[in-house]
Image (cartoon, rainbow, N blue to C red; front, side, top):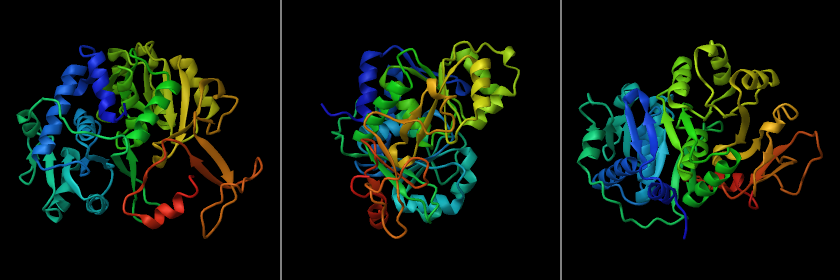
Length: 391
């Protein structure tokens, strides 16, 4: 039996129907897997009723919230391509992504409403859904559509080789590029993270890093779903809210950039019961040994660093707990079937995988593994330059 993101969720619903699965404390939302499944099915039917079909793109322009995850899992069930957009992007950048992705539906919130108002007239064939009660006149109500839809299971056949998601890169070489991943790569990625980040059914993960980034989405939420864990979602990072939530929800693990960990350590941690915490995950930058030691001494946690890139899902390597000090600054060890090489760069052509450089020489990093992207959307030349001989 092939595996897809939607099937990962369905299997956990079957095994843990009455287990608490999703919490959004700021909205007083607490759902079991069964209740969550009903909401995702309703979201899926609402998208179908609005004309979304298998292979279409659905975009979300949201901070962290349950609607973000519900749309992702609904897309996984109907075969749509999920496209999260960085909420920090300006109107011109968002417009480019929506046009390039041919988005059928855009789900947005109050915080980005002024940006959406600038561009929505340029997309007459796109439906805009607001998650707010006081929606603008040009938008439909997300919650009205979802509440009116059926909660029955969606019967659409999804193959592991169907596209699952499309996240846009930052565009350091011009316009951002849409990174396409299939269900097969993302389910493989989930299993890798489950193993290295030690998730299990008792895991309670705090979702506080931005969900538009693949790190939190694919290395946190999905693998915890796969093992029947719980996800607790906060709208955005705030030190006191994070510490209070760790105490109240008995959080066991969460992902944060080193700067976010450092901000937490500036607080009086003695005011909070943080003893539930077991594993701290970080990425985006190396963590200084002094910060590693302080996290371990004051939070009593093991640390794991994620190294990767959007094109790989993102995980490529982990710097595990026992290497945090002795290998500080390292990207870590490639996981399972992933390979990393440092090779001689070519200015006008892709680097040759066999042109390996000796230790301590600077070169180009090339990667391959089972979570590698299917390719860039509508970028044939970029694919030729970026994907060469399986790397």
